[in-house]
Image (cartoon, rainbow, N blue to C red; front, side, top):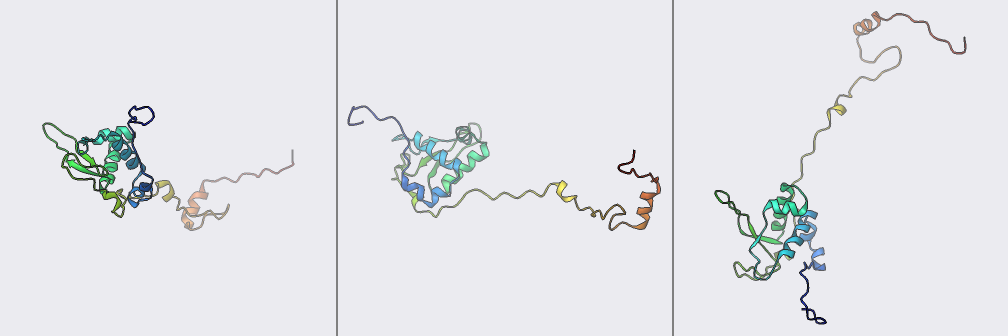
Length: 178
């Protein structure tokens, strides 16, 4: 409730300025940071530990692929911002994993807020991708340089004779004569 009007404050997600300086915050990708804001916005007292975030939903909210959504969830877990309450189940009835946000008490287990993200060193959860090899067009330019009109460096006399065998002497055009 607000003091002036007595009305309830609208739902909101609060990001503390001190979090922005934590190594665990700095280690997060932008997708993981945004997903954390989405998860905090969904939090309601009594519901922490029951936050259902399937990879597909995370990807839709972030506007990214499912792989990027999954990486964002892994980053948040590795850096102590969330923890898995129940793992995803596959089979006859697939169920998404449920999560608890670590800055609030876990209502599923009754544990107090752990603030684990404040004590971890912060590690990027992404994997360095392998660099692609250079395109073929860059590799094939290993040709022998042209020396001038008389010939090409590195060619045998036989190959030069074959190239010049079919040529006919042509008169040169002279400039200025009409």
